[in-house]
Image 1: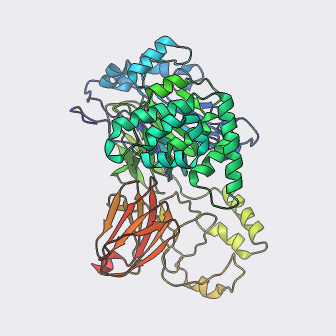
Image 2 (image 1 turned 180 degrees about the vertical axis):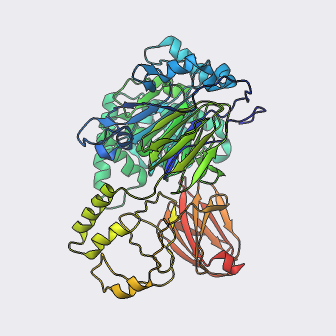
Image 3 (image 1 turned 30 degrees about the vertical axis):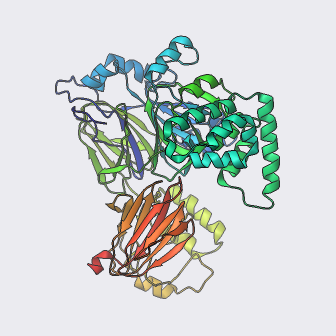
Length: 623
C-alpha cells in the first residue's frame, strides 16, 4: 500500500502473554485535535452462529465470560467495533458507534473525513467448530449495487476485505486450485466430472500451462458455475456415490487430504454442493501466528480452529454452499476473479521487541500481536488514528494518554483507544494465584498419588508458553514439564527427585540447586533472515532455528563450521545440501543430519507451508 501520508503504524496491545491491536493503516497526522478520554473499556457482542464452538472449548466464550456451560449455545464470534448489527458499547445505554459520532476527534481528522465519521474496521475473534459457508465478499462497486437491489440481504454498501490471524492451528479453503490439480480432480473424481459435464471437463483438461490465465479463467468459470448450479437431486446423488466410493476405497488405500476433507464436510452438511466445491479450492493450513488475507471477490471458507479476524466495517457475504442460510449462487459465480494463485501466508513483521505487525493491502486496518513476557513493558507512541485492544491471555496493566494511574487488564478485556493517545502496557505478577496453584496440585495428585512432587509444585513458578516461545533452563535449576508438546534441545543431565517412578536422587538435587527466585525469561527468538527465527542460549553446545516457510518460498542456510540436525514438523517440500545437483523430498517427520561446512537450501514443493526446526552448535562459539 503506497501512501504519501503518515502511517498509523505504531502499535500496542497486551498482556502477560498475548494481546492484539487493530488500527487503520492510512491517515495523515492531525496536530490540532480536541481532547478525548485516553482509554475506554468496551462491552462486546457475541454471535451465537451454529458453526461456533461451545462452552470452555470456545475461545470466544472464555473471553466473553460465557465458558461455563459446555452444553450451552455455540459461541462463534466476538465483535469489536461499531457495525450496526452488533456495536460494542461503553455502557448499557451508550454504544461505541454513537459515542464516536459525537466525538469525531477520537478517530483523528483524516480517518473521520475519509470514512464518514465511523470506525473503518471491524475486529473479531472466531471459534470455529464446523465449516463456514463457501463465500466471497463483494468489491465496493458490487457491494453498492447489491445493497441497492437487496438491502435486506446486503445491509451496507461497503466492501469487506478481511484478514485472519491464527490463534490455534487454523484450516481454510481459499482461492482456486492450480490447473494441474483441477485436471487431476476431473480425472479421478467421476462424481465431479459428471456434474461439470463432458464439454466443460474437456476444455479444462485440454488447457496447456503456456496458454496463460485468461483462457483458463473462462473455462474454470464455466465449470465451477455448472457444478454450483446443478440440481439438488443431482448433487445429492453425486455426494452419496462419492461417499460410498471413498469409504470403500479407504479399505485398500490411504485417502488424500482433499478426500478426507470432503468426507468430513459431508458429515457436517449432507447433500450440500459445497462438499464437492471443496475439490476446486486450495486447502490452507495456518500455524499459530500466521495470517491469511482475503481480498474482494475471492472464494473461501473457514473450516476449523480459532483466529483473530479483522475486516473493513461490513457484513456483506455472498454465499453459495456449506450453509443453511440464503444462497446467491449466480451472484457468487459471476463475481469471482477465478485467479489460481495460492494465497500468500503472512508471517508478520517485527516492529519493536514483543510486537509483530500484519499489514494487508488495504487502508482500513492492520493488526499488531503483542507477546509480552512477565516483567516486561511496551509503549505505543501516539498515532493519528484509533485502535482497539483485546487481551487474549494473561493479565497486566494499561496506561493511556495523560492517565497518572494504570488500569488493570486481564483476559477478555477490550479497550478503545482514541487517536493521538500514547499507550503503555506492562505485565503484573507472573505467578499463579494460590487458587490456581491448588487446582494444579490436585491435577498432579491424580497423576502421581502420594508423591512429594505434588507439594513441591507450591514452591515453583508456573510457566505458560505460547507457540513459538521458548524456555531456557540452565544448570542446577528445578523444573518439571507439564502437558503440552515442544521441541527440546539440551546437553546431557538427567537427575530427578519427584513426580516420577524412576530412581530419585533427592539429596543430590536439593544440594545442587541455586535457589534463585527470579521468574524465568521467556525467549521470543530473533529473526535472522526471512522465515527464520533463532533461539540462542548462554551455552556453547546448541542453538535452535525455527523455519516457517510459506508455499512457493525458499531459504538458504550458509555453510557453518559445525553440524546440524533438521526435522520437518509440518508440510512438505525439498532440501538441497552441499554439492547435490538434485534435491531430496522432505515431508512431515523426516529428520536430516547435515555435516559441518554444508550449504543447505530448503523450499516448499506443494501449496502448504512447511515448518522445520534446526539444532546446531551455538553460533557464538563457532564465530
